[in-house]
Length: 161
Image (cartoon, rainbow, N blue to C red):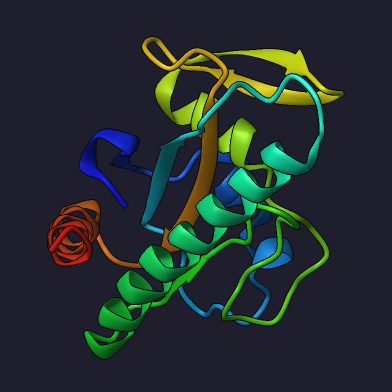
């Protein structure tokens, strides 16, 4: 993972996440306090589904899973709940699934105010620098935003060594 290919930011949960947290993560006894939005630069815009775009998406998914699970593990050791959501399915990776899937594009756009477009039958983010060549992913946590921000920064530094 390269710093120029990854951007992240931490936000308070949106009204949707607050309203539907028990349907997203039914086992959580605490409210979500922060949302980590991760954007990774794709090798190309997702104009069509082909072997190369699927390989690229799989690579970025694996990078996020490693990144998100590292953050979740650290937060868990600190007594916080945290769960990265699978960008492919919208289901949590570490907790039992609820009745509702998380839409990473919608979460990122709500948090960042970016526009969307439709490409290959799917909604995509229009990034101010990368255009449609963006792979979004999300982690929810009961930890305050400042803690998630600090841990995400240390995990990025570790992954770039």
